[in-house]
Image (tube, rainbow, N blue to C red; front, side, top):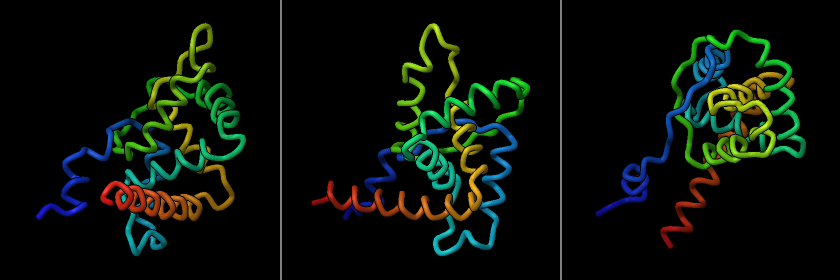
Length: 153
């Protein structure tokens, strides 16, 4: 008998993307932290939480664009990247930002890894960023579970 987990596994629930090395290292520190327990969230959860925090707030788009234009553009564009999976729901939020008018001609175009990196950087700037990421990861997990239940019924 097929379970909800089996169905979810067959649907490729994550997408691979990239994050610049400094922000990836911060996610890795959260992953290894003692606070990341019960459940222990993995990278798709942690990166997804950063995206939700960055674009989900009222001034999220402004903060995202501001970071990309004033901070990320000053960094070495050859900075090493790390591959990182993200849940499809949060990847769609990244894609919405990527398709937004601020990222279209005649404006400079920021790539997907720029946007995911900026989302992590915005979470890093929060006073209690690590705890907010873990709280948001729990919220995202709850929302995925509720969505699975709704489609199963």
